Length: 341
Image (cartoon, rainbow, N blue to C red):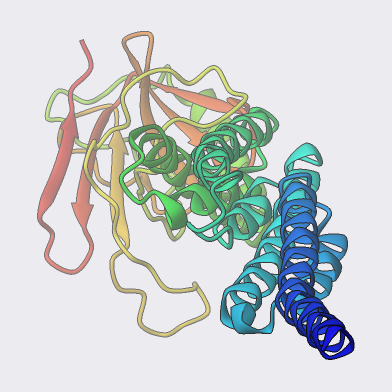
């Protein structure tokens, strides 16, 4: 009997021990896995905050080994780490471009920072505004600098850079309008210079005429306002234009006639439309001395009327104390008359 009781107690003890093992072992494994899972998740989060993206991903993958049922959560963390890694690479690249004053390129890269990047998104937004402001300032300064040395084409290019990103920028629009006027004035001057060079031989002849006329200024008129018998008639082709004041000359007066800018054709063309007939005489009705030359200009300087050769800066000049009539050749319409005091 006693032996039987002892055997029974022993079996009970063994059973209890086995049950305890069966209960404790899973609990211990769960506890071990949970502890390691939390450890590697926490470590991964810390590394992610420190921009150590690859190491964070490595720890998240390790954590997954200890809790497979959290696979979706861990995979989300891994995907976020990959996106933040790309975002950080874009941020550092944009910052480098910004420091090199490549503002427009930097702005484009800053725009790639996603809103989910809580660490750099707001910083990137502020940097974009700063890039645009500095880019505009940089191009304005370059445009003004080039304009100071008459490099208007490149100055206009810098202004166009601004207007591509801010088409209502008042300063850029104002400068562009100013430079367009300067470019037009420059082109007009180049055109006039080209025309003067093409008519150099005619200009020489006109100079001779001016000298000859100067020598006969003292000839007295007849009482009936008819020209002297020895009057020489000189005829040359002319066009009167109004391109505005010339650079590097003493001319500051008003162009006469003030608003005439008539298209013309080459002297070598048969149909010379638009030429002016300029009649110069010592008497109101004197028409025998006629200047028709496209390289003569009429202008007012210090209260006196002058003729000037376009290919010279104020030299030679013909001070006009004569009567002057400017007519259209084809219609004889009088465009301007000058009566000396």
